[in-house]
Image (cartoon, rainbow, N blue to C red; front, side):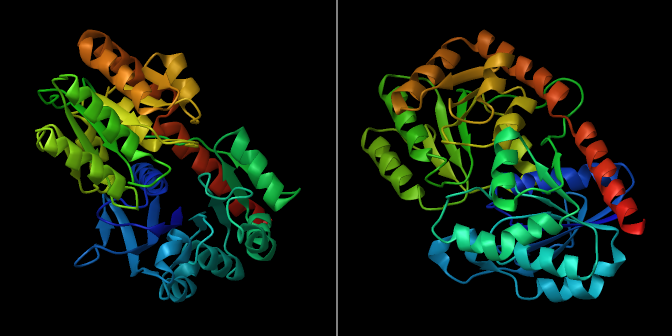
Amino acid sequence: MKILQVLTLASPDGAYGGPARVAFNQCAALVEAGHEPTLLAGTHGYSVPPQQIDGTPVRLFAARRVLPWVGYAATWTPAMVGWLKRHGSGFDVVHVHLARDLVTFPAARAALQLGLPVVVQTHGMIVTGTHPLAAPIDALWTKKLLGSAGAVFYLNDAERAELAAIGGPGLRLEPLANGVPLTTGARPGKRTQPPEVLFLARLHKRKRPEVFAAAALELLRKGADAQFALVGPPEGAEFAVDRIIAEARVDGFDESRLRREPGVPPGRTAERMRSASVYVLPAVREPFGMSIIEALAESVPVVVNADGGLADFVERSGCGAVVAGSPRDYAGAIARLLADPVTARTQGEAGRAAVRETYGMAPVRRRLEDVYGSIMLRRTT
């Protein structure tokens, strides 16, 4: 099959986070199975936009933020729709990673106008009551796009309920898990010494990187022999993080103990995680933390918030700690893992086994093939 996937943003710093990693993982699995996916996305940050990313052919278009303070909702790629209208007929199916923005909404509409089979996947980004403009946008655009799609993928029961509330009855709702590719054999690479505790996500207020930084400083002040790294593109919360890092410098802790690093592209996420001893994501209301299962896939135990979509999975699998959410809670959980590296390694290996069983890419790829095939067949009958 020739598949066109549409994404809001692909950038060298991985700024779009989980949805971008999901899209590239799906495309890589489809390539491996002999299909021909192409990923269409807005972009910034490349001196010369690539034609291929991690083995996936891409068509990237300069992305502009019409209203910079609004975030990705105001991202616009004026040339993308024209390309889709010219080349869309060459694809068997269009898979749109849909958000309320000026990239994926126009692309989905253009694909539907061309009569192409369209599936959409919202990654928890389209929910009720998130913004004063959400309701009118949903009435004008979202409901129609969801209702016109050949399939609407949902991740869990909570997302299914949200989509049904917005789209109304009659949506062709289809479950689809997220997945990560797994390296074969033993965990590659070596953990750094002293042990590294890692935060890898957008520096956005919902991800709460300042909680990680505060927990790190508390542990360093108590004499922890560890290094703490925050890796991710700036999205507003970096100012709070930098204030805590400045406190650490006053206390005599240099970059070898607490530091902030630029974001990494989706294809390098696993590589960056391999050297860590603990992965921490203090995000609140995280629907499905891709970085959590990416860390577990590298046998790195995790510390996560109790209100996240993967909290039950972490507890059930015994692959880390689930905490209430304060810096002190996180500091305590991290300290316990650092103090008992044997248990930490056991938890990491348990996480890798659980991810292999539950979140591998093979079942995701088969599910995509089945749904793509069914809507293509529906179109011809």
